[in-house]
Length: 192
Ligand code: GLN
Image (tube, rainbow, N blue to C red; front, side, top):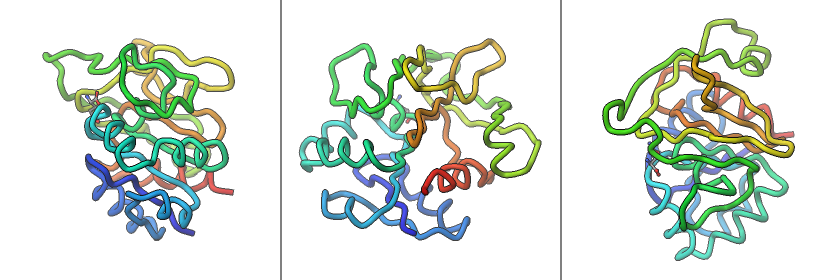
């Protein structure tokens, strides 16, 4: 099994290191051909406008859309924005998930913060009951979830920070910047 990590911009190296730690082969993806060699794809955090523009320049927009109709894609932070159908502004989006996101939703005062989340499917998939300690950096909020997309986790005040739509996963936070391997294990469990 090979999992690709979109390596146009952002913290793709950290995702590759997490994949190594769970014993899964990870490869950098920059070209449409490289997409054909992987069973699933992670889109890292970074800057969603830059990732989108580079995806257009590299001829990856349509290949990524076609990939995501069949195979698992997980977007973290900027990656979650890129997966969404609506980010309230003009920027290249994959428009694969029925979610609307609000970029930089926490403002400057709380640029970065951490929070414990209750993520039920994660607990079921990994057989552990500890809360998930999530790291947020200039994070988006998932403002709304429609169609077959479901809420996976919320902050204590109810704001949505993780969603799943079948084999597509979006998290506002950065599991690749922690030592907790459970989200990567959960994502790999979506590969059938
Ligand atoms: N603020 C960035 C954006 O809007 C996302 C930040 C991140 O990925 N850590 O694209």
